[in-house]
Length: 112
Image (cartoon, rainbow, N blue to C red):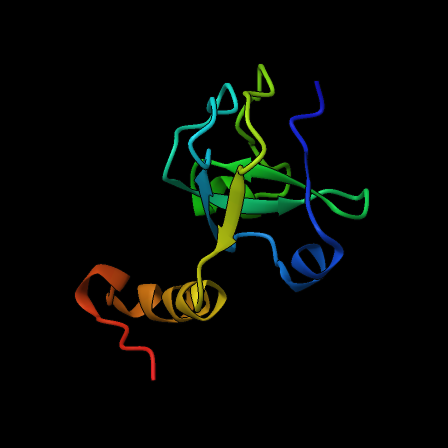
């Protein structure tokens, strides 16, 4: 299994590895291997319009990403992946601040 999910071109083009994505089954049967209303992290496939999901940011941006294993397609027609805003900015800040002892759990993001 490829563990890939086909997405719209605009969604694929806007994503960066490590972007937070919320999965919803839309009331149908959950894609097996995922949890409804859970947040995952994007891993863009080399194949256009396909993404994989990682359980953590670190797994998504690793040299060899570790992705969630999808074991079944679920059911229904309203499944949804929603990109969460500001993730790339958040983790860029984390990479800069951690070496000097500041963690992202000690700062707050207030979108304008």
